[in-house]
Length: 261
Ligand SMILES: C[S@@+](CC[C@H](N)C(=O)[O-])C[C@H]1O[C@@H](n2cnc3c(N)ncnc32)[C@H](O)[C@@H]1O
Image 1 (cartoon, rainbow, N blue to C red):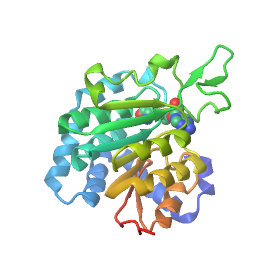
Image 2: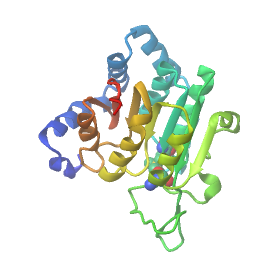
Image 3: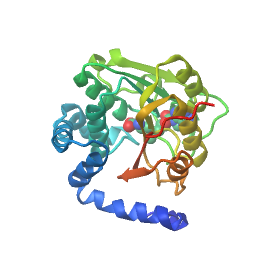
Image 4: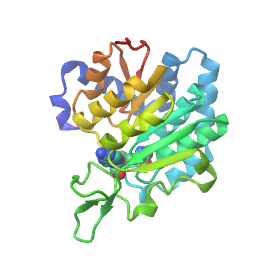
């Protein structure tokens, strides 16, 4: 267990521990999570079965050794099932790297028959001197906090050419690019955060997208406990919502309508 776990407040520790069981019962706990949000049990089971059978997820798992930082198998299945169940028109994600999440989202959109994915990524390269070299100057990242690629062509390389027609990839800092993006696209059905998991970055990304989420839209955020902070809980509380957690994939549904000032 992460020793920083002890720095979490008690309520978050409970959420962390309760979901440790996800590793032992990933399918049963995923079904339970989905049934919390989607009423019909049969549809949830069908979505999970389709995701489990996805040839793309199997291919991605086979390439895991060459894709540092990719989502684990059950998180990919969870993401895929969410997209099959919500049937979103617009998805925005931050953090692409090798593109496992982008590929799985695009596969599910393709099978839904509609929908568009906008992804924002600030590529980070490994360099010969062992340091990380971000694509933009003025940024620095610590090893272990981010995934790296060899060159720009490698960003999103896991996304098959046949799935790219529903995809717009934007290179840059999410905190600079998200505000521009949300002004030019329709309202969002799913926002998926998987860029930098610091408290500040998560809170700022959530804050930018929130007014642009449809009612009942979802925020999904990976690695919510990895930095042992409470961004997901604090943001949900600020908005009068609750969060759930599956394998450190946090979920907030925007149930309440925004107050128009
Ligand atoms: C965990 S990886 C993403 C993994 C990807 N979602 C997948 O499933 O394969 C996180 C990536 O986010 C990108 N990133 C980090 N900070 C960022 C920022 N401020 N804005 C946009 N992208 C960022 C980096 O390329 C980093 O490797």
